[in-house]
Length: 254
Ligand code: ZN
Image (cartoon, rainbow, N blue to C red; front, side, top):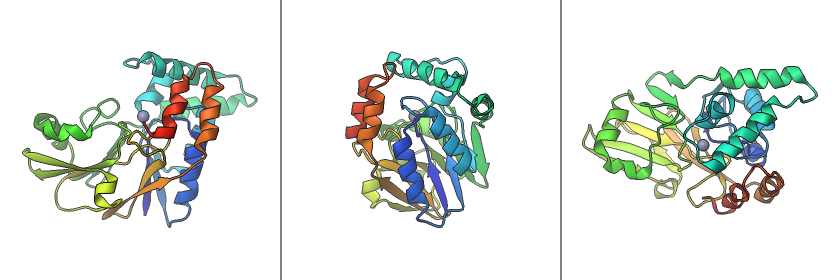
């Protein structure tokens, strides 16, 4: 069994709760599909936990923004990214660890392929930045171009909207199923399928609980995990560079 997580966004309370949930199952590998940092109050701690617990981590757009030139972000996100950068650069007691974190983020790969399964943060066409939203099932050309780059199955994050995209007929018609539509369990078929694993640290599907998936090679199991969201909100409110909305939105999962 694998655990596949994404979009932690420096939310330590959510991430710790997810790691505790993963520990309840026989999970031999945990993959993180990017956005370890950005928005949340604990970037250093979350990077350290990923290094400790994840066998694979991919680069997300917020990770890229924190260490390279941030572009394409709104003011609120940009300010959070620049604050995140100060946290990573801060002359913390152990300077060596600080540099290691920076290098770790900088070395993260953009895609990972395992047999006929592709792992990305955004999409197969643009691994870091492209969103695949549920309503994109109606953009047949877009989906066609993305699916043509996927051999069979794909896992992604980035939108913070969990769910399963299924190609019904090559280049013709696509379906989307939210986790609750499939009772949090989806068995892969012969059809090409993309799975958005949702977000650990900032769900936006109206459910505040941290989201991730377990995957045994055939079936995807969505997990929703309660965590101490009020503590995270308080931490965000206490940091000037993190807009209060970044905390408040967590309570409603938006
Ligand atoms: Zn994200």
